[in-house]
Image (tube, rainbow, N blue to C red):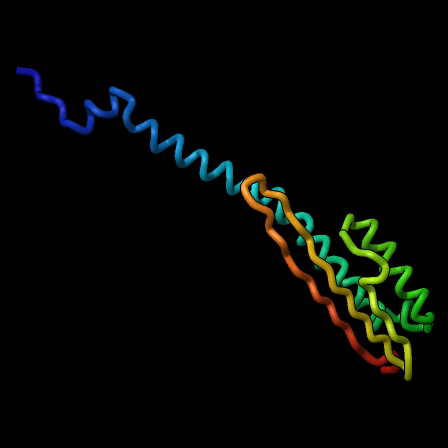
Length: 131
């Protein structure tokens, strides 16, 4: 006598388990799409934050003692290079009393086809020029 197959074995043979696989693959694909669209602009934003911090910590930049307009233009060039949606008026710089007070506020909108995700960034750096 041939042993009778279990119910789950017969369901797999009919292809009913493939729906779960397709749902899983769709979720994985959506996750990858989200990360590919969302991560690069975020990395660029934090690279800009690090660059802003260098204006107060990098000895080469500190020794320049640049005026506020020069610092603002340099940060704006860096933001353009990183493809960040920053206007020069979004960059506030004050170089008074041996300090750079740098504030950059901007939003990055990521189009995820289903909805638009808006990330708000507010970078504020204050440090003394003399050690």
